[in-house]
Amino acid sequence: MAKESTTIDVGEPSTVTKSTSHEKKKGFVAAAARGGYKRGLSIFDFLLRLAAIGITIGASSVMFTAEETLPFFTQFLQFQAGYDDFPTFQFFVIAIAIVASYLVLSLPFSIVTIVRPLAVVPRLILLISDTVVLTLTTSAAAAAASIVYLAHNGNTNTNWLPICQQFGDFCQTASTAVVAASISVVFFVLLIVISAIGLKRH
Image 1 (cartoon, helix red, strand yellow):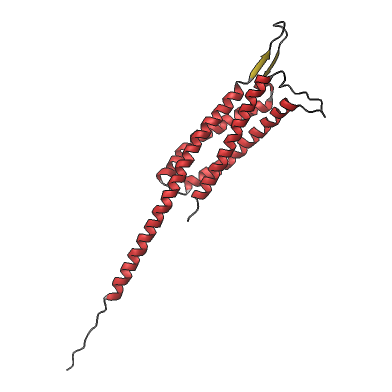
Image 2 (cartoon, rainbow, N blue to C red; image 1 turned 45 degrees about the horizontal axis):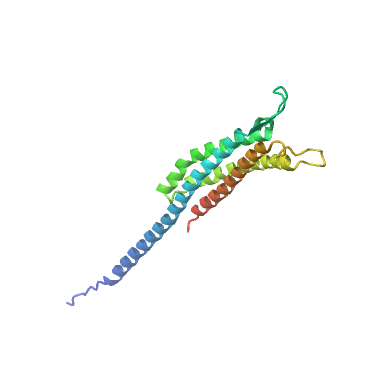
C-alpha cells in the first residue's frame, strides 16, 4: 500500500510577512515625517500668536491714549482731540481689544497642536476662528485708516479740512495704532495658511 506524501511550502508566507512588516515600517516613518513638519508649523503658529498678542494689545492701547490739547491764550478756550471724539476710533479700540483677548484664548489650542501635531479638530477650530477674527481685525483697521487719511488730507469736495496740521501728535499716535493693526492682519493671514497646510493629509 503506497504512502501518500505531503508537501508543505513555507517560503511564501514568510515573504508576505516580511513585505507586510516593511510596509508598516514605511507607514510609520511617513507618519513620523508628517508629524515632524506639522509640529514645526504648530510651533511657528504659537510664536505668531504671541507676537500678534503684543501687537494687538499695543495697537489698542496706543489708540486709547491718543489725545492732544492745543495750547491757547486762555484755559477757558481750548481745542482738544481724543480717540473718544471719533466713533470709528472707539470701535477700533474695542474690536482690537477683543482680538487680543481671542488670541490669548487660542493659545491652549495652539499648544495642543504642538503636542498632537496630527490632530485635526484643534486646527480646524483655529482655522474657522482665525478667519472670523481676521474679518473683525480688517474692518477695524480699514475703518480707522479711512479716518486717519481724512485727518491727514481732508476732503476738498465736502470742505473737510485736515486737522493733522494742528493736532500732529494725535494723528501720529492714531496712525501708529492703525499700522500695528494692519500688521496683525498679515499675521492672521499667515495663521490661516498655517492651519490650512496643517490640515492636509499628505
